[in-house]
Length: 203
Image (cartoon, rainbow, N blue to C red; front, side, top):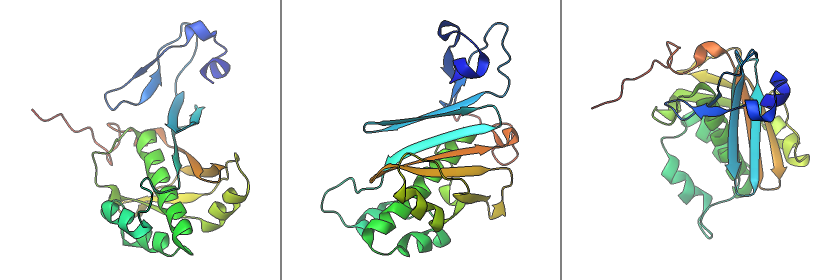
């Protein structure tokens, strides 16, 4: 993806990671890499790569099934009580049956991961600050068509304030794996935004 975007040879393209473990492209002689963003996610046999230069890029892929055979969805949800706020839990538990509730749970989780990875924040924040309003219509369409990203999957609020400039897409790779891609303003990158100031490491 980087080679195609830059018109570079494979041997010219190298990557590194920043302090928050987000991958980035190292300078390429004679090429303009300003704004080039990429993100990678994997789960089981699936790997998702998203890249572009329009804004911050985040991607996530995960299963929609319970990790422990025989565990109920409600028992599983109990371990994530502080991950979602009341409105998000209402949407999750409003699914028609356990399978749909799990899909909504993992869709919400994947979107949060996508935002965290795009901005480079990591998991060291209170996750209920990040709230997604998910389109259940898009989720339903995505379930019917595998390996296709559907736009307008969700909007995001931070501290209950709508965040403009973000787009989120969602798809199903197969019956039990979802993937999400988000793109947002460069100004919201961790350490460059008033929302997400860089926190000095503790001694």
